[in-house]
Length: 122
Image (cartoon, rainbow, N blue to C red):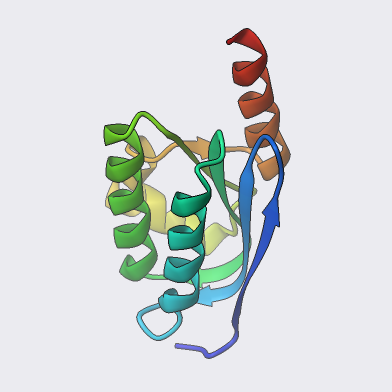
């Protein structure tokens, strides 16, 4: 749909955050896939996919996130999908029923705080 998409990485002790902006569809999902591969290698306490900057997404995003959730869960690792979500993205999650299967958080900071509190309890 658009070639306007950007993935920014923030690495910290508590979280690996992928900030995604623009639109995600079959033509632009590769940049997010590359970021997710990098996050997997880093093995931070939590990987946060911040979708607050996404205006449009299609099933390419859903597929990537659902596969990542399965992989992270199987490995005992944490994944968080952060908002706030644009109406189009929220509608995509709701209409497909994936909102119930993804670890959605209100925002990236909440996901990072959750990771920090989990680490403190160990």
